[in-house]
Image (tube, rainbow, N blue to C red; front, side):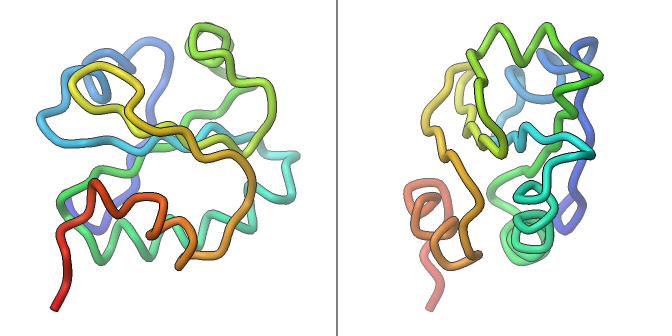
Length: 111
């Protein structure tokens, strides 16, 4: 599944994210959110380069249950889930290098 960003919904969030055997970064986003669109290419690149973490997108307008459950108040918010729990939260649009630094604990060291 490396290289692909998956889409998750309220219905399959537990199955695809909470029950995943590897860390999952969930990008909480919406169509109307400019900063969400800015961060998308960075997430696509990270997904393509790192198979040790799964990247998922959750549209907050279509999935209010999960959005509310995890207290997402502003977007983009990216939560990293590991072992069914939130292991890290990244809020706001950041360049790819900054996101990778935030994810350092979950990404295998290169080189």
